[in-house]
Length: 294
Image 1 (cartoon, helix red, strand yellow):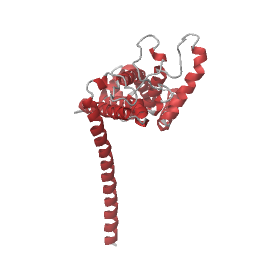
Image 2 (tube, one colour):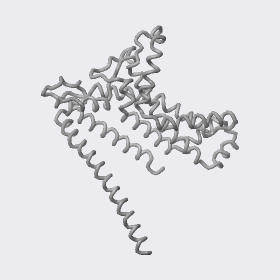
Image 3 (spheres, rainbow, N blue to C red):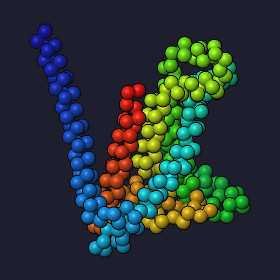
Image 4 (cartoon, rainbow, N blue to C red):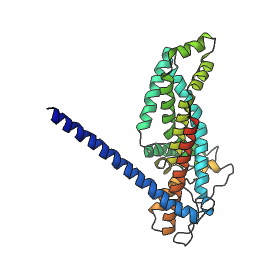
């Protein structure tokens, strides 16, 4: 009997170890391939790969992903500036509800937010496109350049994709704070606003982690941008209508260039993949530095 249990335990441990090693090998292969193929293209076209527009399909030159870098920066900047205050305020409201109607509204908010996490991101993008299309006839009266495919639509889609992750992280952190910390703040005469600020300061590491997760989701998202940002291979004009025109991103560049049969565009897809990988690695390193010792 004891021998059978030992054999069963050894078999389970061996299976877990094999699954772990397989995962490490596959992830390592992906990282190594992206680094090898992408770094070669970036190194041979440096620094033009960061500033030029894509070359003509089938040409000898590769060109660059300058418009897509700028598009990613604009999309993430707008979505992040909208998403951070909303996610923090929603998490504080849900976790620190005092009145009965606030608790009920907090439960609905929590349920809808966790449901949004489970939505496929392409459904989020289609929903934003549908709403923008329905609004276009009415908004065009006041904003003539308003379109469903635009920087604004892409930023809204990224906002909806990333906010649930930031909200859930901060809300869970607030729930884990000992009750005596709240009581100490209220006993000193602090109101709800000041108490919430103190609690967020108490959870500084959690807030940093939540913002890092949200930023990573925005940078790496592709499906939500198909029917919103749509993509563009030229630099956007930074004028009053920039919000209402299609715009490119690094993730869309990886997808579109990688599907073509042109060798120079496939190489450009590898370069964009490596740049995305480097951005993600840099974000991870910065977040670990900010969380150091906390």
